[in-house]
Structures are given as structure tokens and as C-alpha cells.
Image (cartoon, rainbow, N blue to C red; front, side, top):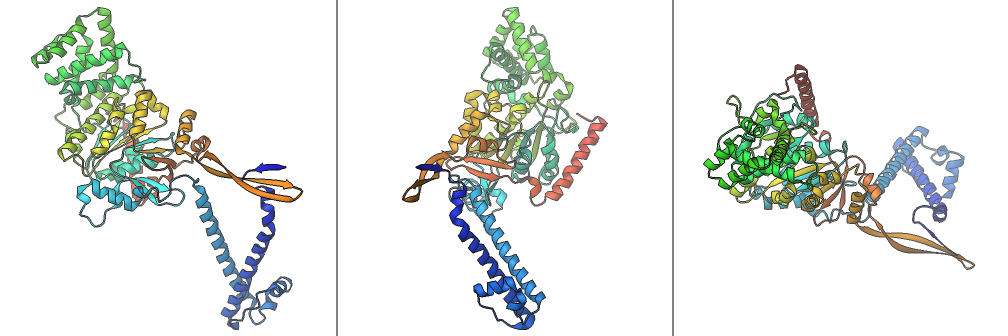
Length: 583
């Protein structure tokens, strides 16, 4: 009769090892006592006179004690020697266990050092020299100049870094380490200009003081996330100088209120067309946001049509006039939809951030991307948020980076870092999936942080999210991914490996053992879902998947100084909030 048993431990599997195991344990203990006692006796002045290493000595040691084995030495010295050797043996066993444990912690089939050579320090440095001309002649390159720190390869390192040509997509549940292990380190370690979007002040409070040490800090906080007083203004309508720019600007406001990018009905599309015409008219006529809102409130106002005709934009003027002169019900529906899209601009506190102010410096994206400055774009999510403005500002900076890269020969050096935290809530750039790979080739190191794959599909649709997933050359999947279909898909991507199964056959002639193999998932879906906090599955283009341990900012060098500054910033935010200084 044949019974199949799994490779894991069973009573019958361990039975043949009981006697050898016991003999090895007793032998190890006896050797430690024999060596320790002999060393102790020698150190006490009795000289090196080891007793025979045999069963007779073991019997005497057990029955009569160490004094009979080493009669010329003191008991204290013998005990001290034994304790020392026993401690060394225990330490060696512990180290051995840890090494074995680390070795088996990484499931077989995942990438090791050999497969990840391009992400190891040496490979990252070589790649950085190729991508950044400014590093080509330097002897030693600082680690942060070679690429973005992803974390340490599980289970025992070394550190892994992506190149500045890579573009990254990270999916993790809330409180799984997105801010502490990814967003904050990316901002702190950035070598060039920085763009950060968020709906919370946590990353801002940790990184602001450090970024002030290397450049200017611009905080765009129209809704008082960090309760920072307004200290800049940005000309939003400057991006509407062309019809393409005006359409992109209108698309950011439409995307902020349209929950599903794959479902754009007639009213949404018509509203975007109308906003495109109004934004472009305002730019050509050097008008401001307040006048755009007035035009929306009164569809009969011919000012935007006249401004477009004066600028030679006859076709766009005719289209806007056709909308105004169409059926009243249709016209009112289009204009009402457009009004809802830009409703956040009705708040004078938000509109002030994008209106000229001679008393404040103007933020210029074209200058920012060539500096080491930092731009924080903060907004609430949900109804009434300034997400459309935030998306427009982020898109303006990113496109300015592309233009600057083209003028520099194709790539920014040093690269720009763009961290789109809460991208699905406050930074809905509609064509982000199409632009993603393009950013990497321009030296724009972009990282998009989402809570789940499904969250992305709600913004960009299934096709858009698939495009974003495919364009990202680095993907980090962290703890708390509860989408069963997506996790199973990732499990299939990780692949399968051979697992041995032991079979025993019992017959009248005795008992025989054989081994067979079957394919199993390297990382089953339940294990991916249960990844510990601070751990992530790394999917890099052209490389087998690997497990990495994120490196939170508070565990790095200089964390004490950063934490002190962060605490001071939090106190300042609290004080400003108490005083009512919001905008």
C-alpha cells in the first residue's frame, strides 16, 4: 500500500533522525564541557592537560563531577571555562539557525542577487553614469545619485535601487508604509527638483525643513491641509495659451468630478469643450479666473466669443457660439455641467492662489524643474476639493520638465522627482498612463501611489489602468491588497516552481521511500495578501519578482534631526490651525 505524505515534518519523517540527533546533541555538550573545563584548568595555572575524549571521561563527568576530571584545578576556573565555551557554542548555533531561517524565508523561485545585479549598488552606479553625463567623470558616486532606494532584498540585503530612467507604480493599503517607506524617502533623497501631491500634511511636515536646506520650498495649499498662509500665486490660465493646453486644463477639472474616466457622457464631453473655449479666450484676452466664472454664469455674454475672434480663433469661436445659440435646454445643461466642474473656483480662498498678486512671488514651473526646489501640492479629496487645480498644477510642472529635458538634449540632469501620492484622489491627470513611459526617458522620475488596482480603474478605466501597469518599469506591491482577482493575477505573474513530495511504500518486503515533484505557485494569493507591513513584492521589467524590505525614513541616518524638525512643524501647523490662519 502506498501513501503520499507532504514534505513537511511528520512523526515518521523524524523517526530515523532521533537517535543520530540525540547522539549529536550529547556529543556537542560533552565537547563543550571537555574543552571548557580544560581551558579553565589551564588558565588557573594547572597547565594544559586535557583528559581523554571518550566515554569514560563522560561517565566520570556525569557521575562524579568536574573536580574528578581536572583534580589540579579550582572549581571556579573550570566552571568559568565551561560557561565561556557553552556561550560560544550557543551563539554559533543561534547564528546558524538565523542563517538557515533567512535562507528559507525567501521562497524558492524569487529573484536573488544574481538576477537583480542591475539593481545592486554596483549595477546602479554603472547605469547612472550612462544616464547622467554629470557623473561620467566622477570617481566615487554617492548612493543617492545612482538611483531611487527601493529597499533591502529580503531576507538579508543588500539594498536595491532603481535607475532614474525607471518609472514606478506602488500599490499599498493605508498605513502599509507608503508615506514612511516611499514618499518621504523619495523626497528626502531627491537630487533635483521635487513635486509632491497629497491630501495629508504628514509627508510635508517630515520633509519641509530638510528640503529647505537644499532649495526653496513652495507650498500650494488652497484648502488649508497644512494651514500654511498663501505665499505664492500661480497663473493657471497661462497653460491655456494653446487649444491643446486649454483642453488639458479643462480636462483636469472634468476629471476631478467624473468618477469613472471610461464613462464620459454627452454632458461631460460638451462641458469640457465649453471650458476649453472659455479658458483659451481668457488667456488670449488676458482675463482672469473670475471673468471665466462670470461667462459661465451668463451664457448670453458674447465676450469670450469676441475675444476668440479677435485672436483669430474663428472655428473655436463658432463652436462656442453654436453652443450658446443651441436649444435652451441643451445649452443650460452644458453650462450647468461646466459650472459644476469648476465649482471649487467659486471659493475666493482657492481662486486667490491662481490669480495675480503683486505682493507675492509667482511660481513658474519652467524655472522650478531646473532647480533643486520643492513644490508641495496639497488638497482635500471629495466634494468641494481643489483636485482639479492640483492636477492642473502637477501637469504643468511635468510638461515643463519634458520641455526642459528636450532643450537639455533629451534628459534632465539632475533628474526631477515627482511623487503623486493619493493620485487617484487629488491628481487625476487623465492621460497619465499614456505619458508614463515618456517621463522616464526625459529624466522625470515619477512615482504614483495608489491604495489598490481597482482605485486606479475608477480614475483611468480598465484600459487606462492596464496601460499604467504596463508602462511602469518598477512596481511595488505592499501589504493589504484585498482585491482577490488582482492578487490572483499577481500570483500568476510571479509564477510556479517545483515542490517535492515524499511517498512511502509499505509491503511485506519492507518500507521504501520515493520523491516526486509538482508545480505550485511561488507566492499564493493568500500570501501576497498577507505580506507584512513594510514589506513589498518588487516587479521590475525583465527581472524575476523579488521581496524587498522597505526602509522607512525614521530608521535611516539623520532621522533624529528630521524627527525633531517634523515635531516642530506639526506644532506650527497646530498653532496656525488654532489661530485660524488657513489661507
